[in-house]
Length: 210
Image 1 (cartoon, rainbow, N blue to C red):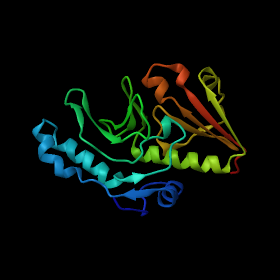
Image 2: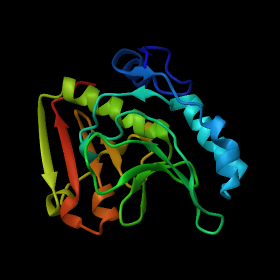
Image 3: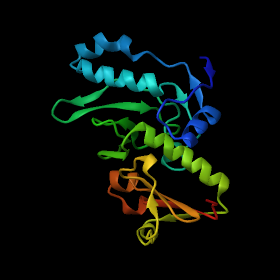
Image 4: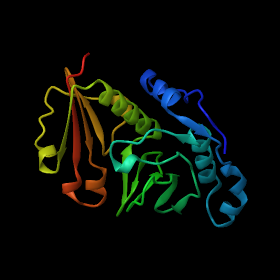
């Protein structure tokens, strides 16, 4: 399998573009359209096959550095066979886990990037938002003077007054907040997906410049 670096997909912030182009590796992507006849023969709508293929065109084969939560996120962004129903909606895998996990990473019926735990839990409104969050975490780790991890009730006690949400991460269950000299990442996905409030975690990056 060959690999290389390359241009980031259009539409990302300058920070995320640099992150993808400098720290990402693009592996040879599989062509999911070649499975169209087999998948549609099993009742998967052609539109869902094309949706997975469009994801693959944009993100397929992209390996990025590990995320600071969710055991690092997908090893490589890579679509696979859609699953679901017309009534419940269709999703497809977003890539294999780096380690053995109790959930998988999925692209939901509305295009959100999330986890399939005890139930579907969208983390970001799109894969772009997930990649933006990885880029922001890499930036914050490099620039912060301090990094504080909080869990469970300590996260709920965080005072985010005076902070503004970071819009480019397109937060749904997870979110990023920007203060005067700090950034806060709140990871709610596992807590919501497993109904386990003790899994709630936040990372507070302090001592950042403007």
